[in-house]
Amino acid sequence: MARALTVVTEERPGHEALSRAFFADSGRAHTVGLCGSPGSGKSSLINRLVAAARAEGRTVAVLAVDPTSAFTGGAFLGDRLRIQEHALDAGVFMRSLATRGMMGGLNATIFAAIHVLEAAGYGRIIVETVGTGQDEVDVAEVVDTVVCVSAPYQGDEFQAMKAGTMEIGDVFAVNKADLPEVERAVAMLKDALSLAPRRDGGWAPRVAPVSALSGLGVPGLCADVEAHRAHLEASGELAGRRRRQLRRELALVIARRLTRDAMDRVTDRHIDMLAGKTSDPVTLGGRLTSGRA
Amino acid sequence: MTPHRILIAKPGLDGHDRGAKVIVRALRDAGFEVIYTGIRQTPEMIAATALQEDVAAVGLSLLSGAHLTLFPRVVDLMKKEGLGSVLVFGGGIIPDEDVAALKKKGVAGVFGPGTPTDDIVAFLRARLDAAPAPTPKRRAAKR
Ligand SMILES: Nc1nc2c(ncn2[C@@H]2O[C@H](COP(=O)(O)OP(=O)(O)OP(=O)(O)O)[C@@H](O)[C@H]2O)c(=O)[nH]1
Ligand SMILES: [Mg+2]
Image (tube, rainbow over all chains, first blue to last red; front, side, top):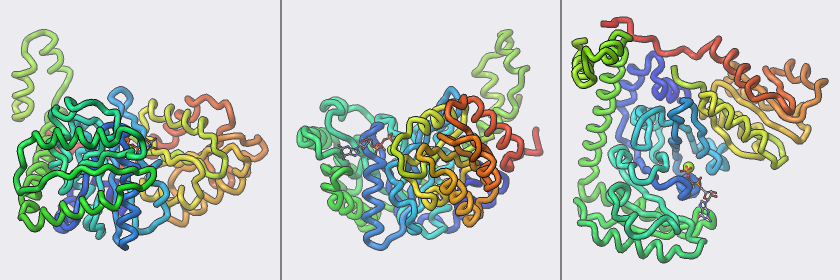
């Protein structure tokens, strides 16, 4: 399975056939995504969520995404640092992934990776996004339940009004509740959420103070995640979310193919045309993406 | 081609991971994807992680002097996991007379203190780029 993950995430030969085969088994797992600013404690909380799932005898898989450097193409994948205590547990699988140029805090092959894990029988798959904070809307179109992680001292009520995570969270974990000021952070978040229009399906996002460090509030967080999953099923919203995920998955494949095909056709001649102003990026880009250049 | 994935791990009990961090940073800046697991990893944890992360190479960093037992142990466990083709290299305070013994036991590269990080990058490039993992073929039908 580890090798299959590599084939699909690196798009090695045979990845298309594999992805096709794995898709047949897809949609069986409950997928949970954690987003939130860098250092808010996403990985540390995942460590706690994994422990909780294992205590109930469930297997769990983790896909953790960290950013690729735009300058070198390299990446430091450090989420494992916080989760390594489960390294020898055969019921836990973790793979670190780099964004490799994709926006939105995820990796373009994330769906294919999820399908591999589903086919391997993992019923709970946790995805950690890059902690970019305000631009992580993608995760809401990838997983069933979005947990937004924040921590005290991360800004005032106006941060909460900016677009981004506030609109996508199903559960809000205010982490580092062992630090002072956590009550203020929780109150601020609740207040901001109360200004937001109620979303479809009647789910009111939950806000819970937790501490990945001490374990305080972790059972409550787990219960909120389970409650959200139950709500998705009972309300019928799960089917809607799944359709949204499928649309997103299709869009990713299309975007990838179009860019790759078009980029394969770019030659020095095209750059010459731009440099010499005999064409322009809009015209050329249009022709290249429609296969006429 | 996608970047090579490298696991940097610190077996043994010493808690100083500055050396490991320097390597992590240098490899990242050289365009590798580097997974770091922190200090005090058992050989079992390192082998299990190498398997799950499906890395091309594992770098071991050790200051405590237990390299003659710990490094070969990692190599053996990795072989058991079917990871015999994964490159294993090591660094730290390793006396010259131990280098040959480690190499014989399957540690492909041994780097003493003060090795320029460029040497390690060059070593990895030579070993990994030369025998690349099967890279996706550009589509045959290029219009
Ligand atoms: N005091 C306190 N510190 C915490 C808590 N949870 C995490 N931390 C610390 O916060 C830092 C970041 O934790 P991570 O779990 O790596 O955070 P992250 O959100 O995964 O970070 P990125 O992946 O880099 O975005 C670490 O130093 C943790 O030890 C907590 O509940 N209380
Ligand atoms: Mg993290």
